[in-house]
Length: 104
Image (tube, rainbow, N blue to C red):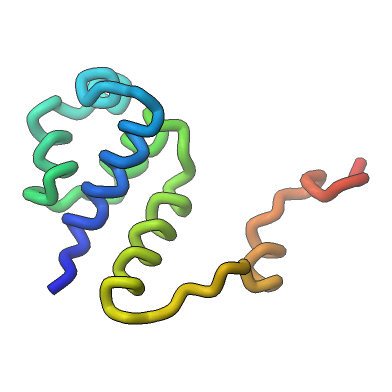
C-alpha cells in the first residue's frame, strides 16, 4: 500500500539532497525541529499544510511542485501512466501575467 506520508517524505528528502542542503539547514530555515523534520522525511509523521509550506519555502520550491511530484509517484505506484506533457489547460492556469515570451 502506498502511504502519502512516505511519498511526501521521500520527495522532500530527494529535493533537499539534490540541493546539497543538510537536514539541519532546512529545519532551521523552515523553523521546524530537526527531529520532527527527520520523522517527516522518513514517513513516520504526517505533515500539516503549514509545515509543508514552510519546508517548501526553505527549499525554494513551490508547494504545488512538491504535491505534483508526490501525486505522480503515487500514480506510478498504483499502475497509472503519467503523460509526458502538461495539458494546455493546466499550463495556462499556472502562467502568471507577463510570463509569456514577448509579453510586456
